[in-house]
Image (cartoon, rainbow, N blue to C red; front, side, top):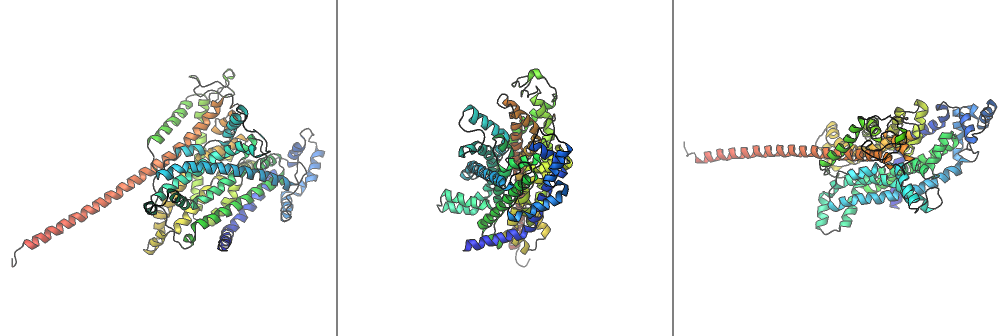
Length: 616
């Protein structure tokens, strides 16, 4: 009974605080999707006619028949209103292309994606546990370069390699379709490995501070088992990270378009992409609405579990936050990673990235071509070096914008939680199509689309941390002794929030680069022959079996970028805290020296007083 009351109370707070924001964002997304055929500037009648029959001639009579059949002459707002009126009855409309009801197609695609999401999320959790276990055993963290590299593995490249090795070469598993549990193994591995690297790094980053708290030492001294101590430590660090687990699950459902395409999986993401390409508006609207509903339900469950873990301490402002501890990072780690990456980029900048030599197609690495050549005979090293500026620069700009926005929204948890649930559930591909319809395809449009969807995980992380900092007993004590709001904000709240969220943003930097690459793969981002790393991955994917070096070069570069970003941030934080600790120790030493000097002076004065004869 108590659990039911707690769940109902949490659900009421979740719906009341951010319900208006969710409703507004949901209406905005659905409206934008409904206007897609008109925003794109293409005649929807012509697109639907081509999707129905590629051989039929697009005569004025045929186009007029399609417009009359679909009711296009009534305008987009009328069509959107008619579609919305059918939602209370469970009617998602009729497909413009196939003429069948949309609801069965959406339900079927959602069931497939949910099954794939469950399998991929299970693999991600297992991998995250493997990354977290050394931290629990040693009691201290590391820079997390390896986990960051795993998070930077391109999903579609991993899917292609898994398909070739396990499906084609070894013949162990099926390579396409969806007819049983064995068909989900390879797609789940391709999706679960990067997600597991990300989630494992987030948990491992928060554990060292908890494991150095006083209660851990007391529990171990009292003979409490290590498993129980580890479980309690995980319970302590999970609440601010639970929104990230929910968002990762939703991302595995709607953001798996590339993997679903590689393995021909009929999931909801692939269904939405096909509907967007053919401008099958009812099917696209139904698919997007299903993804948004999934995002809202997952966000509500994550909020409920988080409040349940925190208990009454969050409501009664009785939380005690762990003291931030810098992870241990050897300076050789970022130095070596930077040296390798800068050497490759600098060497590539000295070479021509556009020179085509058809006689040197798919050559293996040699002294003349250190990283081999691609399908047109172009130098892979040259294209890697010249594409570094656009790839890293654009991804860094998007990452910085998302970080600043998330820190600002972290102090508005109602707005952040409501908008992030909607934005996170929208696949980047659909956002890319909407943005490209307005501003056209290109690097700027792709960057805008990714920026619109890259901030929700960071904002959710910041909002959870801000909420817990505000509910801490230490902050209550600061207010009681008269600390000003500006002092509390700048000296306590921001330092407690900015550090973890910044490390989280750096961990997502390669993922942003991959999101830009996936849009380029669909023709919505950088266009050939631009030597952008995402395009290099896409161009080499077709012949990865014959020339794997062409695909491995940008993939390894992205992994090195991830490891460099995370290890550099850890080392910089460690150095900053070390300098701060040295300053504190120096100030304490000087203060103690002054106290000792004063004590000695008082002792000498007392001694002289006692030695002075009476009456003198």
